[in-house]
Image 1 (cartoon, rainbow, N blue to C red):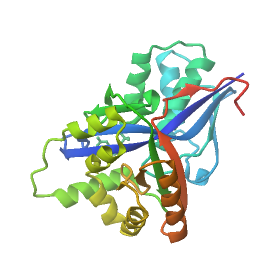
Image 2 (tube, rainbow, N blue to C red; image 1 turned 60 degrees about the horizontal axis):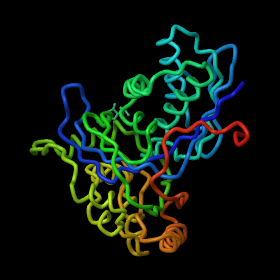
Image 3 (tube, protein in one colour; image 1 turned 90 degrees about the vertical axis):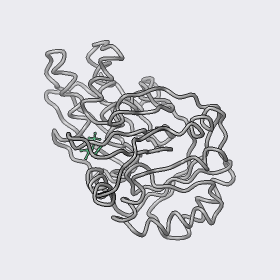
Image 4 (cartoon, protein in one colour; image 1 turned 180 degrees about the vertical axis):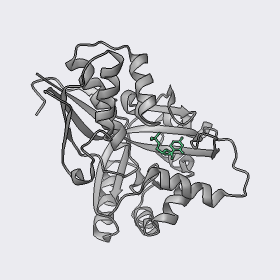
Length: 303
Ligand code: C5P
């Protein structure tokens, strides 16, 4: 028997970062928006824990017990006193090491898939608690939609979204490590007073209204200077998208994927075409938001 779960990528429409905490993490006001790019995680009964991965960038995904999906299966099995005897197959479509929570998506997907496969009916709250232990972005991958994450990003408040937003993502040629980007943030802000991270009310209002123009003026990412410092050519990609008519251009999370908010589906196509032609990125994806969180794929549709 197998269970397949589909999990979305995310973009941070606001990522306000506070100073480093004693535990090394940073307090955040993190406005997550799930977008329609998905990984699929299939859990199948097996003699022992095994992870396979296929799709773009699959060669960069670790297949041992450091894989977040494997860690999710182990954490769930441990809670229930089970052996994590499962084959997890990840069909990757979310850019790897791209700042779009691909690894977190796989963890949330594995958790939901194993819970269903093993017939555990773990409560939503308990699943969210396991997600938070696995990583700061994992709870959001489970819930999807839009949410404000505080603490290190794992304490979620769902947000209302009043319409569809059109996005273009430029996948960079290379990856960035999230801890390295936070370290660069610390270096760049050293000796300065880093303000408390606070969610922007204009941004929350723009999301609730489904107003792309208002959202474009309110988006922000405090990790962007750090990502640009480590990956300077991203500035060319951002400029290309802006010139092609994107309402807003920003680095997605810790990067190096860049995100472009378009006025409508037509404009998104124009921005995507200009990015592709510019050769400032490796691939371009056009998609909508918000997207639902981790969802079991009905058997007839699962590949
Ligand atoms: O929680 P997660 O494993 O996704 O975090 C990866 C790394 O990103 C952490 O080890 C830390 O370096 C950095 N991070 C941070 N503050 C956060 C979230 C992540 O410094 N709120």
